[in-house]
Image (cartoon, rainbow, N blue to C red; front, side):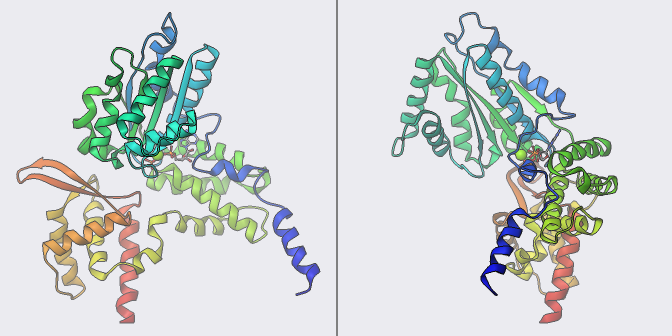
Length: 406
Ligand SMILES: Nc1ncnc2c1ncn2[C@@H]1O[C@H](COP(=O)(O)OP(=O)(O)OP(=O)(O)O)[C@@H](O)[C@H]1O
Ligand SMILES: [Mg+2]
């Protein structure tokens, strides 16, 4: 290829026209906070009301203020974005009222311990390198700093159930170390199963308000996705038909993220194929990619019995109204599935190991501090994000192929 043409390729890839508006692609990022959050007005109001005392204090900053909130609700319905939105605006409101308010957002999947959360906060906000400090020392620095600046901190802990229990307790008891002048507030976000099973008994006495998020209705989903699509795409690139399709996809799983990701991927694919609008075919293809934990290569890594185990849980959860199952129940299903595929089942200990693997790669959400039943405390099993029907279908297709090959 001559030099001229190679340069043309680069020129073209950089500047050829796009279905996205300028900067539009970024508005479909997970971390993007839109200007308006439709149908979350009540949640925003309720979150904010908990911070009223902060603004009512006469001698601003001298008195302490602390509250702990819990946000809970199923996947992809705006818990994270609503928390970030509210805290962002609370901060600017505080500025206007000459109240010094620090805010921070941590996803506990990325920052997995209390120590690392405290350290990164001290580093980012105060420029303090606290490496090598103990938790107590870090906390001490934080407290002194907030006290001396007469400042407050609101910390969002997203996916909080990922933290070790002692760390969650540590955070909840943090304000006590201030004595009378509490200055740290927490917003803890978790899914309902994690909230009910592990968190609520542990922290609920110290939570001022538990704010429940409900899934959007189809019409609401469509309206929100239309708004998000208009932020991201040129008007000529999207049609009503496409919006209907994407709303439908989101509505199937009642997860708005699936719709937003479908839009994003379809947009990227349109650009790659030099199309100037999103087509139904692009949407259909993109839809199949939006369950990241479901990519076929993840199945390749799993042993056949591990796939049977995943299937055993998915089948149980496929029944209407069942959101979690138990090891005992799934083990029974697993034995049946082995029979169906003509393999000898392994024992319960091996089965439990399969579950651990599935949990590690993110297909399975295991909540070990289980419900008390007749047989004592039992683990509860859930699957992440993916609808059970989709999981069943894909595993079965994959298994048939694997069996054919061998
Ligand atoms: N009312 C809304 N208006 C605009 N965008 C929204 C709204 N609600 C949610 N979104 C968008 O939908 C996507 C999913 O929302 P979010 O990440 O907040 O879900 P979540 O409830 O935290 O899910 P998970 O439990 O999986 O973390 C995000 O891209 C978010 O910006
Ligand atoms: Mg979230």
